[in-house]
Length: 266
Image (cartoon, rainbow, N blue to C red):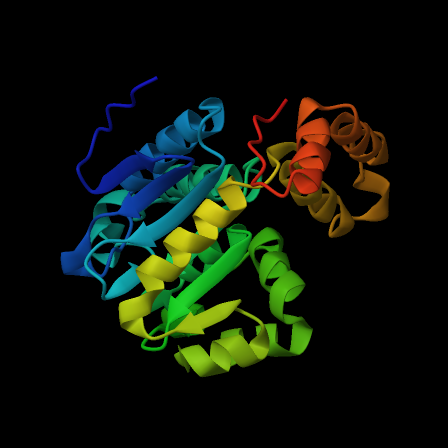
């Protein structure tokens, strides 16, 4: 399907097996409004339904920011009453859940500022690759904002409890090197190399067996859940599906024939 977004502040494009979701508000460091969160959810649903798309890259336009959190200039219109706050939070939670629960691999390509809700969004991705000029921070303690269990758990799952506390307690900005030291990002590249590196990484993942990759994504997602909430039967079913697939035959055959396999996800 073709999504017609209600705002030009969110963009999407498809390049082969890779879908790109772009936050397009560079004059505000890609701060996110309510309508942008809504559009992001629509684009992600389209990527999920498109079998040709095997990997999704999330990034910000302009090269100076990934996402710098909520658009504070719109707080008066979007978050000034309890009802408005609830509506905004629902939209943010929906978009973040759409990324976190996305059935295919996701990569956050970060250049410049990744602040507040930007960190939250990046944590919803499977991998985070940034430029050496990137800056990370969660300024909630400077704004009096409260963060709920789900958002904080995602941070703790990635960096551990002590670093999570440091990030929130200080509310300061951390360098790319510090972020990598905490395990917040997977890779740090010179700014000029980030786009080509992520493109190559995404295409590499997209060329691998999607049933295998998607099964690993689901199983890792179960690992970080409480034991009582894990769907171990689905884990086993997805592994069995890999071994019963045409792709498994193709992978073995290509290996023996010393050629690149052509996986179809079936």
